[in-house]
Length: 329
Image 1: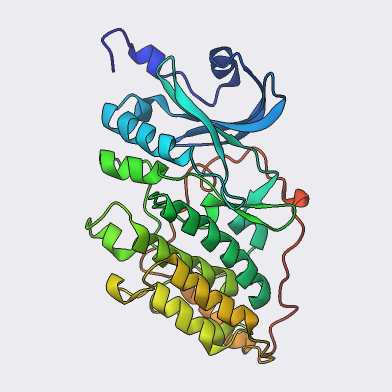
Image 2: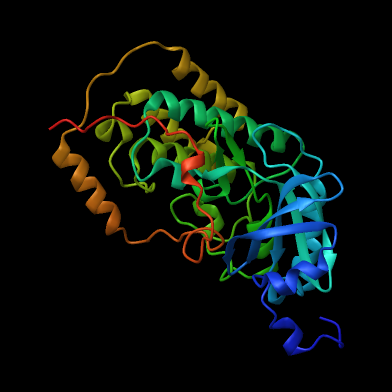
């Protein structure tokens, strides 16, 4: 923070369109998409390209920290070089009037957790979604970029049911800065070594998150090590359990060696035409859902999208995922 910056200036809310718009003259800002403790996201049109974009403005109390600003810039510069159909493309980033910002591809859709509607997704489509997500992460890792905060709320699903990953490095930037209160760790998708402070995030923590997301899609229950196996709750077979268990192994050296190995396991499952018609007992499924509500470590939803204000939720713009019809009794 420079000496000229006053408390009054810092108190301006980046979720105030009237305050933000004059600082971005090249963008016609339409409306607020979401706001939370990290900042606010807007739907905008980039001129003169007339391109729809998402403008994310970082909260000034965070962005003014030089450590965060330096790490944010490093991650953004690296992420801008990524170009993959399963990644939300970053077009621009920078600072204006002491506000850090990033401009990215606008995805007409919803976050993965919203798309599921709180229901388990059929194994076949889970594989398709996980292969999308895995391919995007593999591309990032190939370019030495780690996400560090993979969870359903950082993955968008468009109208074609294609997964697109967003927010590379944002949570890691806060962890490196030491500000974990602003971007709380999500115990259901975050590798244990991050909680233990052994790493801010790396390739193997991303692998862990992929396994946890796969469990969530299959069961609609946030992942924990002592929860029932996915095959006990859904129509998937035991090989799905083995893939999840290896990806989320508490000993990081026992996980898949890299995302490509995880993808190979998914492809093997997809190419096997074996049909599993067994469905779980309704009582067992309900019991598992109740158990998830009483977990010792509760789910900490991502502040930008989940536990604060979501202004736009275009769930109707996304085709429906394929859900099991009913849980057999």
